Length: 464
Image (cartoon, rainbow, N blue to C red; front, side, top):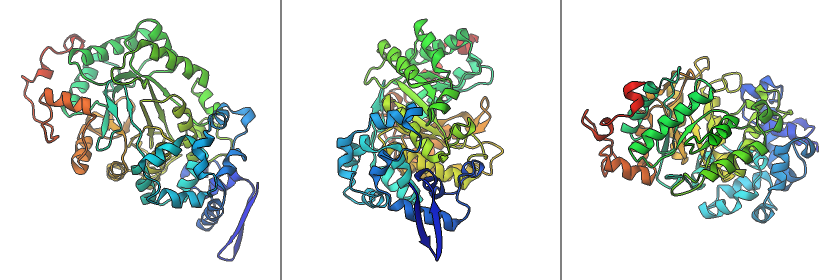
């Protein structure tokens, strides 16, 4: 369906809803690389004017990627909750924005309509929003999940403890784990990106993580971020696996480039559920996403990268994950060029995910060849904190020495918790207090070599 308007005496024509969505997107290098971006600010504004008048129900009929050729599109349409959508069905995209910003859109109401919101609807309305709009609405959205602790409660900020090592040295990983725990990190997950996909080496990592969690009775979950097929094999071999991890994208073709499909994720979730390792809940999946993944795989179908990112959240939503996060600046400046684009993308991603009912965290990060620095990340971190981000990353020194990118540190999490009066997940906070790592005011305490966490050290830390 074509769309046209006149702005400032100039006429603009958009030959399809797909084109209109792309032209309305705030400027970013990935869409320009794909030849999808608006040529001028005037064209972008004209596209926003047209998009505001599009009825929400149009997105259920005028599909950006054909139903017949894409299983993600089929998932979006077949799982759409018409009852949840009914209160919004009369709205345009612009009217939806106005309603989201109104007092009528409170936390319970937003939770009730989330199953009726398709990713294209969420992406479309985000394109009409300023940064402050994205923050205000996302803060009203609440998504709570649980495994060995409860993530996403009001007034809480969780941290993924990310103890990566370039050679998977167990001593290096264990040392980073203890370091993070002493700073109050690790309640979202203790998650290691392995340097190898060797099954025996992965089993060693699972045993290490499990030993630390069990030895100190930490109410958290562990994860090794290897391919889902490896995790299925490891479950079959008896690995102490808590969460199944997988990177996902917003099109079938992009997911195929990751070596996955929905049936494979179904199998993995069923396998993890069969282990029954959760104590306070059974949300067993952990997903990572990022704008630009479909474009980098030549699997974008002419759709802008932010809309495709929102479609990845439809994949995540199917599996009721404990955690999902956008690795917002990781893919590089070809997709998000500088700090301004990374900040905008992080706020968009968090808004769209939460609006759709997905627990959304963010790896607030950039690569060293991007036009960004740690001050930009401080800005995004603070904005996401005010928006109610579910969790962030905790990496020693904010420098991941295995993946070679810049992210957030244990200290950054302490800053955000102190600034906004946030606490860890309640079960994890109780453990921190029992271990005398945190006091009743939520302040992390200095420790000595005689601290209980440093006694009876894990075998791998002592012997390697």
